[in-house]
Length: 357
Image (cartoon, rainbow, N blue to C red):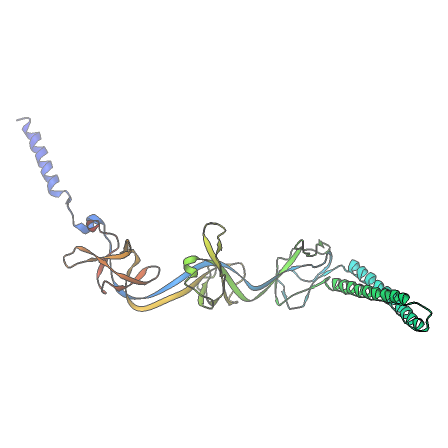
């Protein structure tokens, strides 16, 4: 009897555990962890999105075309300037000396030419009277022609010297705002030549019209075109939306800087300035490729790929999941248009049911 009580106690505990233990064979939906949604009519807008940085449509990097020290610096970063406004004046001492030398050289060649012209006229008279030979006339004519060429060369050198003096005054090429002005009065700058770019002085940016530079992948690039409308938004200015247009698309793909094997297509979206937007801030562009209203749609996670087919699992009247082949249309970030295969209100699975795999 002393062993009977423990046995009865164990049997009682086992019976209670069996009676209240959770059902080890629950409903199929709970076991598979299936989430559901309904097909419904929606408006779908298919878009291409990209991110980039704002910059001015028109901007110029200002460089000196002659070398020399800066005599006057008339602007600084942030200043607004007008076209042809004087920005920088270089010391013109050397340029003026070159001009004066070229001018005197031209004067010398002009006087030489006048003397040779008089000599030529004189021998042309003397040859008729028989006092000089034809050879002497030819020699004088050759000397005169050489002097003419030397006079023309001297004139060209003077024109160049005058132009160099003019280039010591650096003017704004267009209206805009000054940025990146890091030079100082007295600093010696190197003029831009064919073998070097020279010293950059500043940048003049026309901030009346801005643009966003983005890189589109090859799939997105084939879906947009020049002149298409775009929406521009800004991370740093929440709620601001600017209407823009695609103003440039490169016809050729280039290697992405971060992933060289990836081909991208540099694209520009232009939009009007204002509302606190300034060059340098980040921006997002959205281009509507196509749209449809009131179409039958399911969540994108309800569409599964089977080879070349697209399947949606629909719950039948018996509660079982039925795989249906569908024909899709447009898609946005969350929904896909279903042109054929299901009707509005159908319950679809958002994960692949394991029982029909």
